[in-house]
Amino acid sequence: MAAEQLTPSATPLDGTAVQALSAAVRGTVLCPSDDSYDTARRVFNGMIDRRPALIVRCAGTSDVIQGVNFARTHGLVLSVRGGGHSVAGKAVCDGGLMLDLSGMKGVRVDPVRRTADAQPGLLLRDLDHETQAFGLATPLGIVSVTGIAGLTLGGGLGWLNGKYGLACDNLLSADVVTADGELLTASAAELEDLFWGLRGGSGNFGIVTSFRYELHPVGPVLAGGVTYPLSKAREVLRFYHEFASTCPDELSTVGSLGTGPDGSLVVSIVVCYCGPIEAGQRVVRPLREFGDPLEDGIQPMPYCTLQSAADTGFPSGRQHYWKSSWLKDLNDDAIDVLARFVAENPSPTTGVGLQQMHGVASRVDQAATAFPHRGEQFDFLILSNWDDPTDAERNIEWTRAFFQAMQPFLERGVYVNDLGDEGDDRVRAAYGVNYERLAAVKKKYDPTNFFHSNHNIQPAG
Ligand SMILES: Cc1cc2nc3c(=O)[nH]c(=O)nc-3n(C[C@H](O)[C@H](O)[C@H](O)COP(=O)(O)OP(=O)(O)OC[C@H]3O[C@@H](n4cnc5c(N)ncnc54)[C@H](O)[C@@H]3O)c2cc1C
Image (cartoon, rainbow, N blue to C red; front, side, top):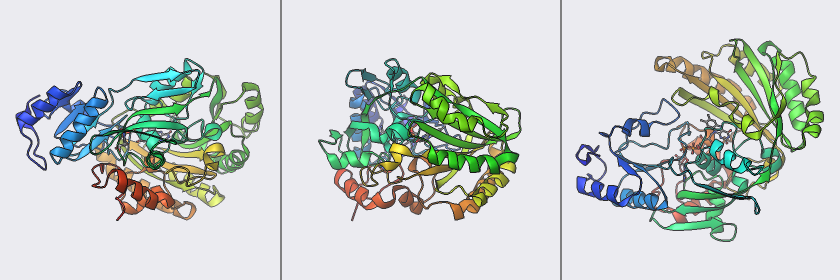
């Protein structure tokens, strides 16, 4: 590391201070002249091109504390990278200090108590791999290369929500490094206000160095998708709306529209039944008997196979621009707009998702955790992505026009983990009715708003 080549920051960094930080951490400190710097500053969304003055690749909690203290003392913006999958790219900052937790991948499963202690650099696939060794799992997301940290702190929608709730509903406790470099443990029994805020407050209060999750018996599951041509969108999505609204907690579903492997436009319904396979076969029969599908891939499979099934569609580094809100009523007019815009989709890799929220996840009281969007609904998400940066303008224009046309059917609320950089109103819409209480927790645990490279909650007052 060549400390003399540091990017200027709020308080000029002197090489001696950086050398001292390097010596104090067990991981590594990178600056712009280091070979691995450019790889380390990259995140999932290829549109994000920020250059921190320093990257601290943390090996453990001690390094996190060192990094926090260094950034605070030197007046540096601090950003925190877990799995690096936030589409807004908040994990990386310009000119500040990026704490890279991706090397912190420790996990300990207690199969008797059915808990897992997990470090924040784990991806979903890492944690699932360890818990599935014991036939257990905690609800996470649906793409296995996503980071557990950002996903859990924002909520966590995935295949087990109907039966076991969101990822954040299964958090039992968390170790948190605060802005003054103190390590706290929050749970239902201690620091209850902090624990409440961590479950949906999206990294606003401190840096989580360990998550304790509740585990459940899971797998094999009955899962896969049934695919139809987009020309059948109206019949298929009408059926889907009805099917999803009557399905048992064990079944979770995702509707998707986009381009199939052969280049034709398709609409699919993907399901996961996490109870006994035979019972699942009965539950999914109406779906399998509906219409004349191009493909029916529903079959029993290991849970980890389902979790990684969508991974190839999400390689790191593509340009991404997303728009999202909650959708309660998938009526015919909404379906017509969906089908019309998908038919004019400028990128074959772009997809539209309708991720179902129902069952246990939907029945948790709105005030029980910081995650406010409870109730039966779909997370409607336009996942625009393309490879060539010169295609940005037309893809972004199409996404905005599509989102605008969907407005009559959408709720104001938005899932915080789907947000791009969309301004304060959208951030407030993400925290919804819980915003004021979150602001009070923020004031107590981070009164100077030291942690602001996130979907930010302003300290109350
Ligand atoms: C391909 C893809 C698929 C996805 N699928 C799903 C899905 O199925 N369900 C779902 O709910 N979401 C999904 N998401 C959204 C996902 O939840 C968010 O992108 C989330 O931010 C990912 O977490 P991360 O750790 O990878 O992100 P990062 O970009 O590393 O972090 C995001 C933010 O979280 C905060 N943060 C991260 N780690 C910590 C920490 N240890 N302590 C405190 N704050 C921290 C920071 O503010 C950081 O800026 C998906 C995203 C992508 C790109």
